[in-house]
Length: 388
Image (cartoon, rainbow, N blue to C red; front, side, top):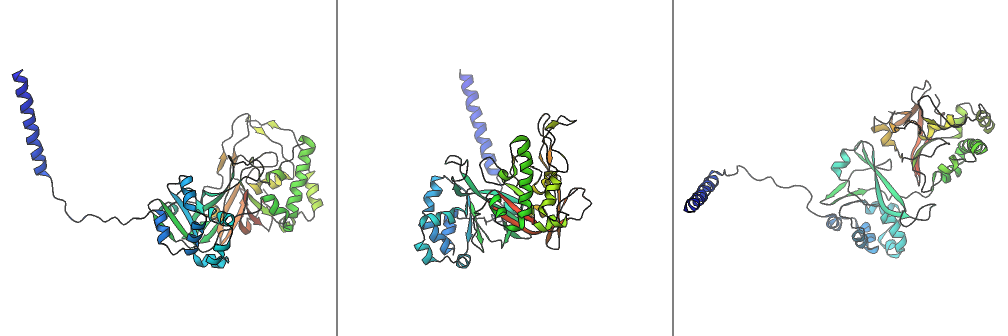
């Protein structure tokens, strides 16, 4: 017992001596500590310290602090129009004081994003990053309070500019410890129409809409299941899509001078039944007209609903080299085959040129880009169709 006590005591002494030696061996740091130069304020403090007078007035009137707390947002992103931007939109402090809270809710909620995209993360993006706003609706078909329609903002970087929904803005990022404020030079306007509403109210797309209607009528005769007109409408079943919309002139440039020419094309060959190909993939039939049109909407056709969101803005088309030939979905035997983006994209003198993969025809110039709608984005083609 005494022997054990001696060993225990001796061990403690050795540990004490070792500790003293380690303490004595510590090296005094050389040089000065590096000062922290990153953000020092939380995003609410940063907003309070900014000169975004009108934005802050709206924030206060709608009691946004309680909204942030109720949603338990720990980090988030603000798109904040400057006072000059609000002035250009005819929104002043006096007007804010008289505006209905519901209208201000809509305005501000559309500019608040429920996740954090810092300036550093923005610099590393290739294309656009889709981000939820706090603005939602439940008055569209199939949307409910527990599954609302959510408005998105699509943020990216192109040539040193902040891209929001494909549109360039000066990049001015105010960084906080839990968020970023992007100061904008304009007030963002939420989309009001879906694809169907936009195309039917713009007569320059009457050939396109008639082509869709004719193609749908052929499907209806065979399956009683017309699709394209439904795919253009906003419902909870339809994913947002990118539509390269040819004008009437584009049809005429490709040889379809009248609507009757479209009907003749639709009757070029009969609609086959669904079948399995040599690789055991399920093949949905397409009309002779729809097979011509399908490239304009990124490889979904009137026989199939897109089950993947595909929102591509102009900066996506020019900055993401992997888009052309990108596999949208892998496919599976006894189900639909793999689907790919069958278009190529190139920038030329400030314009974007688009063509079908391996097409011998000249690429088509997009005359208008980034028309943001409730269920998709439209880029306009005017000098011909995408044809193999």
